[in-house]
Length: 230
Image 1: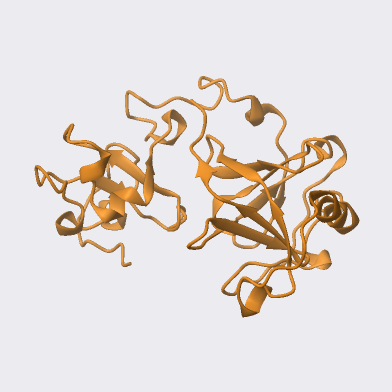
Image 2: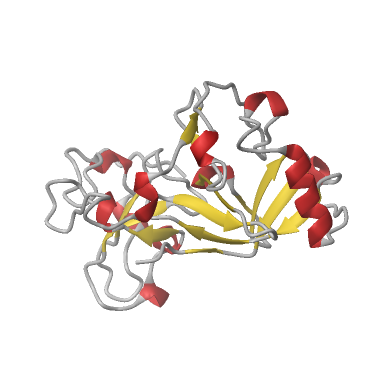
């Protein structure tokens, strides 16, 4: 869906250009017809990461336009710094802000280091490419971060067998996980061995059954991605 509205200026809530928000005629509350302001700039994942900047009524989410149903509310750290509801990560008391390390990619995306590995991992510039589903080779991901032998072991422990989801993943092993957004919009999930891993939200692909993230032939599946804890 195109995010170009032709509007000038910047949103007082998120600070992004109004041209990157949903068009007014596509964002009206189905009950009162007031505009629900939804930001769709490219830093947000269109599958689950669009942000609801402002809801002008109390009609309830069941009356939201479709553009708002695919979005989540702004976190305190996501408001424009000039907005009274803005909080810095330190003010918001985010425990992840103090120790999270990331691996940098050319598109400025990043995969967070697993918590057990973060103290001995360093950020390395890598090359990644995307298709219908994002996959990463052993050369494109820090091996301290993603150990394929460890991930394969997770699959065995989970007792999952090969499952054909579509032609692109017919040979992939499926590992079911529980996932949740962090306050920074990343997706955090825990493996069966108890290890916590964080990835950018746009690495997860929305399907009719849930959300998927594939790496080295292993497909991580979450039935839902819960909202960040407040």
